[in-house]
Length: 65
Image 1 (cartoon, rainbow, N blue to C red):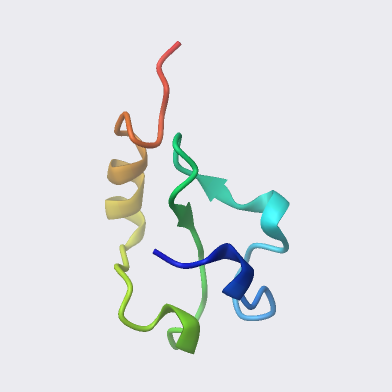
Image 2: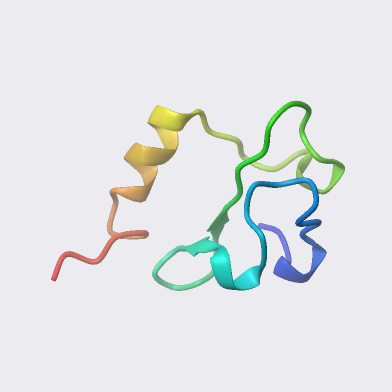
């Protein structure tokens, strides 16, 4: 997990803390980047597009109301 204050928004597609996609409990976020992995993300779990869509369809990310 990354501390949101350590995100370098110049290296990812998201633009600010307010635009992050967060898990239901707000302990995880999704960051999208192009090219090489930004240094602050090295060693953290990475997913391809299909994998993250599957992950984000779980109850950890999605509340069925």
